Image (cartoon, rainbow, N blue to C red):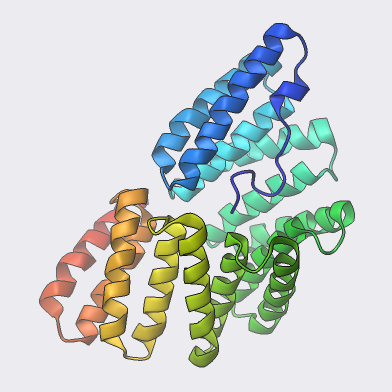
Length: 314
């Protein structure tokens, strides 16, 4: 996902007036861009610190209800969600949405972004009933504003498909994934990181149905794109490694799965920190592989560590 998260392009340089204000707007832009760069490197904790500075500048210059404040709130919430800190993210997303609806109107694309991101947060917490109407409203705004073939429409389609997939609505999810993939390949090119995301998600959908022969080439293509576009140590690369490992694990190909799990875990610990929920997931997956391989002594410490991470998140 791009740091701008589906079209958040309003620079405070153009929103504030006056020489002093323009200087402060430039300061905000510098902080926000730096936070985006840190996020792109997987340095989420550092990005939070810098984005808080951007938010402070925006509030001082534009007041609490300025669109620039909404942008920083949205970015900061996105970072907290990336760190698994959902309780910190939710009020920021809600405040960003309220500002945008008030200042930009209910059908503005930035409102769609806030709706989408809040829905993503709810989906991550299993709050599917709350998420679905937000996704659908976001999709409707984007189709109206941009037309049916815009990358932001593809994002909404992908996210709604994810929601249907976790509920076992596979036919609905597959149709939305394929439409999203077609839009992104046409608009962004076949080697874009956002294309890799759809490929990964479609592969996971096939995994869930036991369609491993259809899933494997999609996982491999997604991994190759992410390594090239994002570098070998990005959290998205770790996710692709973990998911490919799961595919092999499900087929009993433990020797192929184990090194992928281990490389994924190393990347996650380095970029997300040792106590992130995704680290716990990877530990659980590797422990399950060890148990199925008869290596209980190696599985037990991983399970205990994962349980401690989960307990701290409650």
